[in-house]
Amino acid sequence: MKVAVTLFPGSNCDHDVLYTFNKLLSADSYLVWHRERDLGNPDAVIIPGGFSYGDYLRCGALAKVSPVMESVIEFAGRGGPVLGICNGFQILCESGLLPGVLLQNIERKFLSRFVHIKVENNSTPFSCQYQEGEIITCPIAHFEGNYFASREELKALEDNGQVIFRYCDADGKVAADDRAINPNGSLNSIAGVSNSKGNVVGLMPHPERAAEQLVGWVGGDSGLGVFKSLLS
Amino acid sequence: MKAQVLVRLKPGVLDVQGKAVEHGLKSLGFNNVSDVRIGRLVEFEIESDSTEDARREVTEICEKLLANTIIENYEIRGLE
Image 1: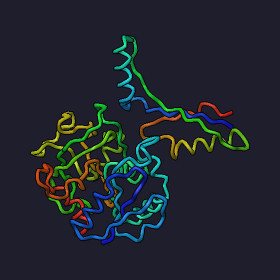
Image 2: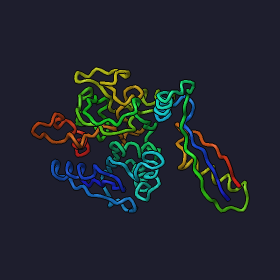
Image 3: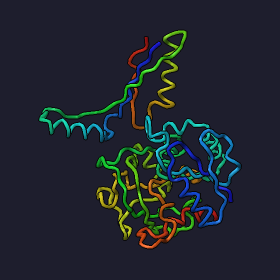
């Protein structure tokens, strides 16, 4: 399994993703610089988190016009699996590979904390290792994570099962208006979505930061399944 | 010629920056201020044979990069 990890000026979770694949899962993942068009014939592409191009203009807006994204869009169009995490999710929305957009958090705060998310659809290449309803605990670290889509788009997402992850509490309860549970104010508590074909997935939380059990790490390793799913 | 484009969040889309500024203004005592909305003015030079051609191209520039039309409107203000 070859996994290309895109690298933009300002990406900062790229090595966490490489570590997860190369050290924890014995896969072959490697970085692809934003000026490159050649993805190296990968089986999957991950767009990691960070602050690509300093978040200038809008988060992800400048990354979407980079040479590497032309190749990622083409790869996704051929049905190749693509995952965007945090800023990667923002880039996928800006690129039009995923519906909707990430607005600023509803309470105007940068949020750096743990969240629980529930797997709503386990038929994608990035969620198939989980049971439906299974709860993942992992960190969020973002200012713009408030998922927004038009009423029609939102209905289509829900009807087609394109909501892949939803913010919930430790017991799986979903409450969109409760900031302890849905901290950024996302519509319908949406933490992650897919495209209609299911091969492109984006989420705001960081499963790569909860992929290994460390002493005292409250997150555990429940995020590892996102990457394991790809290998299965 | 010089182009000016104003990009703003659509009405109804929560503007958290606007809200923060509004709170700031209220704390300064401007209690008569409400509905603060923040936009972005983008200025650039564009080479073109005619204003019509330039307008067409600026529109494309707005659609492709300057605005995210899911949440933002754009207005081509000046083209001279």
